[in-house]
Length: 74
Image 1: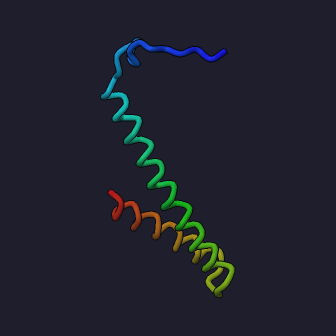
Image 2: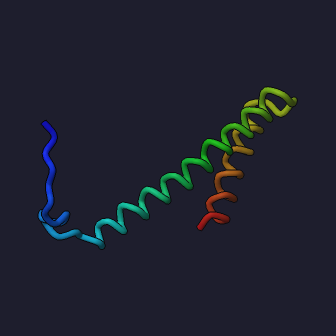
């Protein structure tokens, strides 16, 4: 059967808010830079496959997009 608690919600250890903020900031940054990586990869792949750029030119484009995106997202 389901248990019904009527006591206070915070009966365990106190929250460590500084650790919570660190974890939240890590998640936000990982999401932000992960999205940048995926978008830059898709643009570079499209440039390699649908134009005459070739592999090495699209690799340079991929690196430049990541560097520029890193400076814009800081």
